[in-house]
Image 1 (cartoon, rainbow, N blue to C red):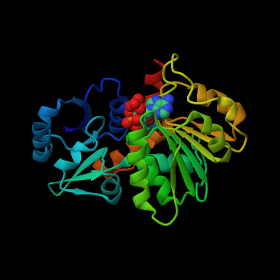
Image 2 (image 1 turned 180 degrees about the vertical axis):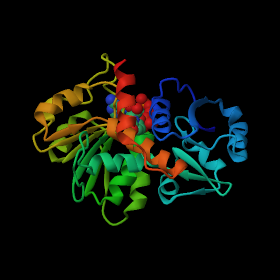
Image 3 (image 1 turned 135 degrees about the horizontal axis):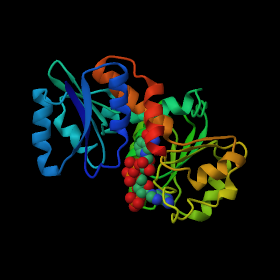
Image 4 (image 1 turned 30 degrees about the horizontal axis):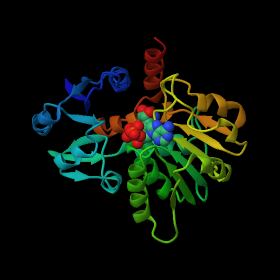
Length: 283
Ligand code: NAP
């Protein structure tokens, strides 16, 4: 029996075991997926187990997506460019880092399946709320897909600046990214945007203040909310006011599916993973 799992801290909320264990069962693979809730001081011992093959591959989440880069032997182009990983696979005894959030986002953005946005962002203006880990993977994807301009805002100005530096290094000819720090500028930037992305947890709790005045959502705006656990007020309002809106569910499934393939060499059973996820979320 092979063991895979999720490395992180306080990760009891994770839905990854549900998706991966359902996929292993469907493909009759002798494998299981566990949570490795790990304190920073125990990271060495976790990576020793991985290197010895006691664990055959893993996902990595908050707060170790960047720290884990210190423990791997190689990384793919995307993980290397972002400087953060969410998947580690073993290849001939080497630990190889991947970032499947970037691919999962791209697939949900451009895909044509139910729950995908079906948008080619080439030449488009994008407004992003949040400048954390997810936003970094998203910016990597958007640059590769040749967007025109990105406006970004975060309650923490420093994080927005770090992300603007990161994006600035990717495209030096012309200003790719603008930091929007004042709520009074939201209307101006959103009115020019083709795509609005929520990369914050805002909207998960009923008590959360609105991200912005939802009357600014216009009929040509596509909306992608990374939150998947609940229907956020942003998605609720976008359903009637915007061109098309999706939540983060397909991105979550696609990033997991890509990790599954990296570990097993097999195509992931997307429908099985989706059904298991929805059942867990409903029940
Ligand atoms: P993160 O690193 O904590 O980044 C979120 C950022 O948004 C933080 O800098 C936060 O600032 C900021 N923020 C919070 N409320 C804000 C507001 N109202 N306006 C502007 N900025 C605000 O989190 P993350 O890992 O990037 O994840 C962000 C969200 O995406 C989470 O809900 C996560 O579950 C979701 N996600 C979904 C997928 C998927 O597959 N669907 C994948 C990755 C992430 P403070 O830290 O100061 O609050």
